[in-house]
Length: 447
Image (cartoon, rainbow, N blue to C red; front, side, top):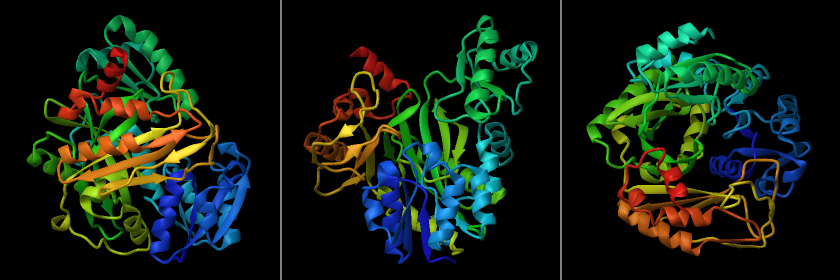
């Protein structure tokens, strides 16, 4: 049990976690960099401590500074949010060694699922379908890679075992391209992740990106809370997400969801998590599990009628899940747009002062943000400015509300991707539903 939570993050997710803590009567501790001194969650916290300069490596990624702040403030638990240290098994271990509660999975679960090869092997053992390919890392020998690729069949994709965020991946169309791709991917993996291991899988040409949200407690109970479609991506970065994933057979999704629950129970998973799949020709293929709260969790909250952050906190306190699988019902449809501070053409970050801010409202409209007029968007962090979430009785209703909300939203003084979202809402393919992960880049290229 704990009565105070240190929030080891910033921006909209720090404010989101803080609201959930306050609703449960928990004391909150904010840590912030010098660039984030004026953020809303800092002003609202019971205790706020500066942990370093603007650079993330000297503040939000400084494990010693965060742990010192937890000790100095009397915090009993640490919530990592997403990004930064949220999937760092070593940090979770240090939190627990300090006698604090890490609000997330156990360190061994984070470590297992953070290793893409180990995760794939564990999912196969649990009966979760995976992308065709081996369960072992390549040794780096070209002949071995050729044998593995030929057995799968070209095109294949090389992936970093410790990768993420769209880095450490190369598509190889034919044997003649394999040698260079293997060398480049191995070196990129070593430099980016400190782990040069690479594995090979079948490259799926036109898949959708579909997720299954789960939550499990420390008593062996687990449920899945519905599906999400996150196929609208640019350079492997999600732009629009929705729940439930449209156009998939309900019995197929149910079977995959139950397989994910069984996988959680098999590995002793605790907390929220997301299983990510590529879906092509009606078949699901596991690619990875995110052992944290997702940026897109609000669309699941809107359709399931649950507060995922409060559930996280209650599970971390040792409580049993207050819901069983038969209690989970998906109601209506929800869509989230990531509003980023970035140039609409080059997509380069656009830091600066927000001179004007007008947020939409009305039934079924939700804005998760830390920004407002007068806020200076820093250049040191992710460009996410706000999440615009809408909910309707049907996908058509949600799309109609989203069009109105996007027309109403105004951000002045800096560049944003609002124009891109408005364009997506005019695209016949997206409106029909079920587009693949390359659809957005084709749409942008057509411009």
